[in-house]
Image 1: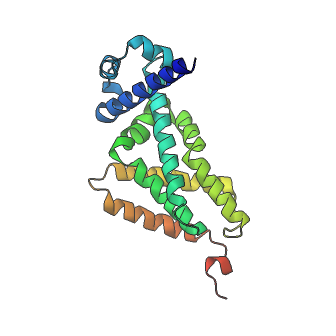
Image 2: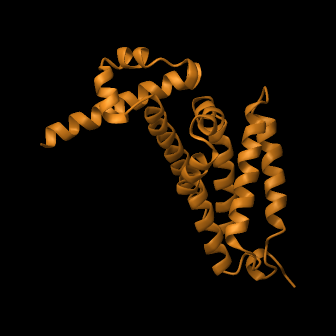
Image 3: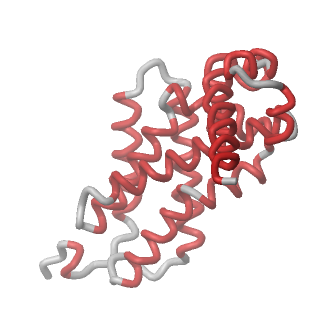
Length: 203
């Protein structure tokens, strides 16, 4: 039984990794299932068994991308013990990861178009947005944030970063737009700081 489960997991992983490469290079519409299974050295029957259809396969690929981005956000935020730096590092990690070539077409362009905005947003809420909400709630509990609605703030910041990532994805270079975006996000977050000793207020 264990060997069968390992073989099943290996098949699923192979299909997702191969499909991710095709969706990145060709986009969802121009990626052919025949080419994906041929490169993966598997059958269409295996693909249909595990994912149902092309849309189901794309959903699994997007889930993998979203999960990787969330892990990167969490890892980057953990580089600092300062809560404000954690927030900034996490925001930067999300925007930078979203526009990387192996992520942006799947995550920003085809994701909403193929699955619809409602499904895409639900997936975002389960990954990077969840981490953002948790960080903001924690900061407010510690007295670092003004008493605003965390739900409203989470959606506002998440929406701003997603829109910034979409803008950056259309730019010919990544470095300058990323720095410009992070300057804006940092200034935006300053408005939510709760004055006090923990935020550098010496009065």
